[in-house]
Image (cartoon, rainbow, N blue to C red):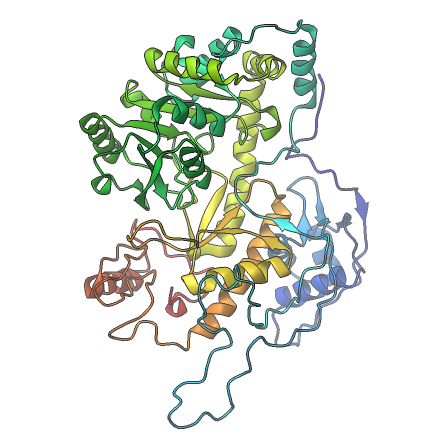
Length: 577
């Protein structure tokens, strides 16, 4: 049986090394901290090189004459920070990371506040000014603050932008087998606008097992991906001037596709659960939504709201386009059935292999009622749009042999590890982490572009939600951190950089009275902005009621779901956003 590299196998060389470290029992610093600091310093200065194998916890504890717990805790801390790699049973290794000496600090972008301000000047200005949210986009240089590690060198970029899967661990034998089978077939001369019957049958079985969508091949069209399927629906259903709803904030491409077909784009507000049905207008021709894992806030549309959404669609005559975004990857409970299952005649379901396998395949699907699918097929024929035959044949082989299902099971475990690393480092700042390949890091609007810019300087790339607001409804702001395309070590290190930058912002901005009476910044515990405060994360309402409830939950030490409150990142008493 052929073997292939996968996430549970280590590819690091099994090179052991003797550690020239020691600890001082008389020092006031705990032994675990001493050992961690010495190992960290050895990796920084090159004494310990990438790929070298460290002694076992038992051997090093015997060498240092300390408890094994001391070594275990030191290793665990370094593993969490991304310095070490490996898994239980295969050894502990120095991670494959490039460490450079810190760069000298740059000159501040704004002059520091005077040491003794005038009597009428009020509190000293913080290190970070409360500039506009678009400072980084307009080209302004973010002010400098101390983070301890300096700028990231070229060539060590950690890409934590969303929408990118991990494509390095796959069954190479299955991959080659699928494409050999596709190459053995003769080329076609008259592409079917619906797609290959063989693949449509395999997709029907796949959707039945994974998404509880009970349809036949007559309900399925093979597309080149979600964007292609959305464009075919728009070209079929929309005329110039028709109103098309998109989630706000949401997937930018959806608005671009509708606008390209001449539609008027209508922003539709979302909250932590998804699209807000009560605020949908009654004159939409099409509504695009992501009920499985809303992008970017990460909510899952609950069943009662799904029922209300479909009742709205039936009442108004609108077609709901369901992007089954990230439905394959769920970490808390089993995925809800697709929205399409509740009303197949009113909902068009779009899916793709770009996240579950690779974007290079260029294969997706569109599921709709037969009459609507026939109209889409006529549009596709008129546009001479098609999906490549060899790619369809290869995907059919992967589905028929069960190779794709096995790949999905492996990747669920791998992504769950990375998601856990992000939550472990960033703790209470994380939301929308129950599914998919990204999380939301909620921070004040003014901090967003500055942290994005400073993270990029240190080699960590993230996305953000800030931009032109399409609706007047208050909404969350923050960073969108994807963990799909980076390794586990890179995810840990990148999340640690973000946590450090957020903590630096918080320490600087903490001197501001954000929650004073008569004004303030919308917070995560119900801090209000007069009567227009934005609801917080833990059962907070608007105004004083939200603050009171948030304080009750803080005192109880639990969140709104009754779980122990997370305090990993910082003391929650200092979390002002």
